[in-house]
Image (tube, rainbow, N blue to C red; front, side):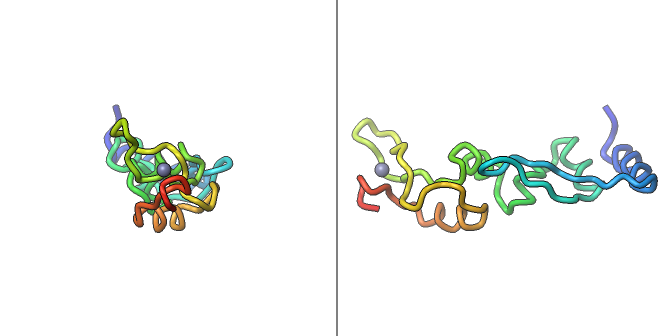
Length: 115
Ligand SMILES: [Zn+2]
């Protein structure tokens, strides 16, 4: 396995040869592509960061949930079986990451649970 520094060095050689580094990360409805630095790619490759999550301003756990729910926010009510309700809060899916994060942090309920 290459070290982080070796990966950065190789990627910078590629950039000097005209290569543009991009991260094509999953997003609701498909993928989002953004240019990234050699340092960020290397940090992702060695497992120091989750680059798609970071680019969207989300923690890795938030990013996984944002993708899994296609930009919808899961209800925070607890069911009679003591599990988190699997319905979505009103407003549908396909929210961008920051709109999703803002709503998720309010711990909303679905319409059945009074949301
Ligand atoms: Zn609910």
